Structure formats: C-alpha cells, structure tokens
Length: 214
Length: 214
Image 1 (cartoon, chains in turn purple, brown):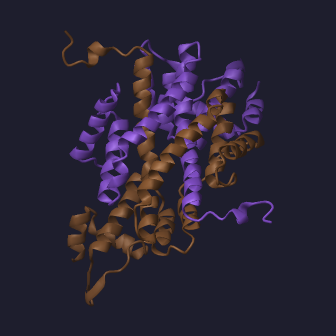
Image 2: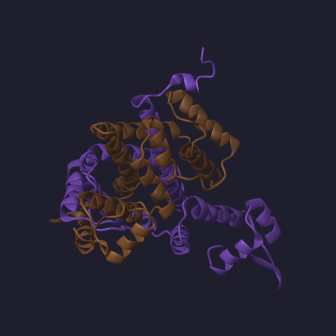
Image 3: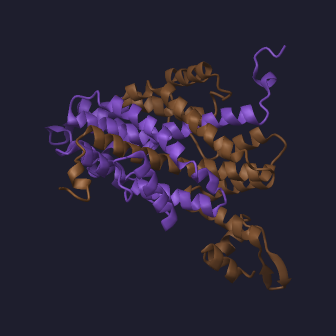
C-alpha cells in the first residue's frame, strides 16, 4: 500500500509517519519508483505499536527506539533481552535511603525471588518506600510483602499469556507491549478497586446508583 | 523557623520554596517582621508532600494544586472527595472501542464492584484493552477478571492502612499520597516479579548468581 493508505488504516497522519521514518522507528518502504514507496502489513503493525508506545505508554522517542530495537534484534538469552527492553521504561527518580534498599533486598530474599536488588525496578520500589516514610505514611510500606504477593500473581498471569508465543520475536513483542500497557491497565484497575473499597467503607449510597430507587 | 532552615530541613532550595509560595501551593508563613516570615512543622510536611508529588508522582502543578485543595478542604462525603482528588491523576489518553468499554462494564457487574464504568479509571482500562487488541496481544486483556482480583486485594490492603487514620484530613492525605506513590510502587514490584518469573521460565542460570559457584 502507499503511504496515504497506510495513514488511513493506522489513523496516523502522513507527516507523522514521515517523522517516524526519518527517526528510524519505522523501516523504509520498498521503493516502487524513485519517489514512491510501498508499505505492507508489517509497517501497519509497527505503526500501531509506535502509537501505543507514544499515546498510551507515553514513552519518549529514545525509549521507543530502544524497545523496538529489542523486538527487532532479540539475542539468544531471552531473559536478558527482556530485562534490557523493559529497564528503559522505568527509571528511579528520587533518592532511596539505605534502610529502604535493605527492606527491598530482604523481601526479595524472603520470597526467594530471582530478582536483582539493584535493578531500576528495585531502586524504584526503595525510592517509593523512602518517600512514603518521609511523608508519614510509612505503614503502607510495611505492607510490602503483601503487595509483592499480588505482583507475583499478576506476573504469573502475564508470563503464562506470553509463553503461548512460539517465536522469540513474538515473546519479546508480547512482553514489551504487555508490560508497558499493563502498567496503565493495573493503575486503572487499582483506581477502580479503590473506588469500590472506598464506596463500601465510606458511605456508599445505593439509592443514588440504583436504577429503581423504590 | 526561617525560610533558610525550612529549605535545609526539606532539602528544597529557597527559590523553589518561593515559587511554591507564589503559586499558592505552600501557605504563607507568619510574618515576624515586614521582610521576614516564620514557618512551622506544617509547612515542612506540606513541602515534602509537594516534592513527592513533583518528583515521585510527576504531577503537573495544576494537578498538585487540585490534590492539595482536596486535602485542605475535605467536604462531608469522603468517598466523593477521594474520587475527585484522585481522578485528576489519571486521564484517558487514547480511544476505547465500544467492545472494550462493554467488557469493563461487564467485569464491574460480575465482581459486584461499586465503581462507575465511566470514570477516568474505567476509561483508561478500556483504552488499554483496545490497544492490546489492536496490537495483537488481546489474550492479555482476556485476563481482565484475574487482574481485577489482584487489584481488589491491593485496594483492600490500601484501605485497611488508610482507615487507621482518625481525622478526615489524615484519611485524605494518606489516600492521595498512598494512591499516587503506590502507582510507582506496584509498577516497580510488577517489574521485579516479571524479572523473577522470566528468570525461572527462560533459563535462569543459578551458577551466575551464586556467591559460591562451586
């Protein structure tokens, strides 16, 4: 298909597609004449992925480039490929004190996790524990093990779905997309579950929500 | 304390504190002379909260203003206050198709949640389901009910911690801080749990990680 058709099918304006081509996020089409290129289903799929990473995951272009690179060039050790692809999507932003870092390391130990206590993810958890403590809501941080158990359940569901893929490229693709979009899915579900728990605890008024208040 | 001491204790530069004062995020200190104001523990706590909302939650100033307003002026219906304060922290970014919206509404129905299927959170969930489907990893979205069950567990732990507070202000404060910082906490824990599940599934090599490879 031509660029106009690609634009129509993906719902992405032609100038934006040209920008992705220039940035090397989207591979060049096959030249059918010196001034015209043809695009196929793979371009369409890639374009949709880029839009999801831009719009829904809100990743910066540099992080998107690195995620796409991992999808395109997965090496033999899948575990490390996944780690690298996803590391860019989470960067610690604030300081973590040594007590918080120790608590994360101890949790990893207690749960027997094969997870580095120095990864960006572990540093992020320690950073949040530090902030919770400083802000006087450290008791939420004391629930770390219970929260970790919930994360374990979610990761098991994620991995079971990813594992149905038959090629390495597909496993990497599904892992990257599922992990990044999953962040927003779980944030949304947690807000909804809060709304539910809050309504039940702090005065939900069924009459207001019932279709037949009699 | 004077502004220099407030700056030292909070680890926030004086010009930044003055910016927060001008923006009305931090209440003015008590004037001890025409050119000098005094600040107290409440200013320090507020300043730490603002830094957490800026650095860790990365909220824009307008959203921070709205969160602080809810903490300062909680009205009688706590459930609605919380809903409003937290709604600003999650905004749907992309389109959700009607099938995805229906699936979210049906999940709410099945679980008996007191949660609006039109809230920003529910719209966000529908938006992610739509994106997963478009990107060919719709099978992850089929796990919605299992993911919702995990979110329910997390929300119950959150609410139990928040419920220990004795004043409305404290409940709102802990809810806002816990919800926003919790987003990053759970994202970090899920990444760590992925690392663990991925290591176990895709060739974790214990010899590399053992301190004594013999």
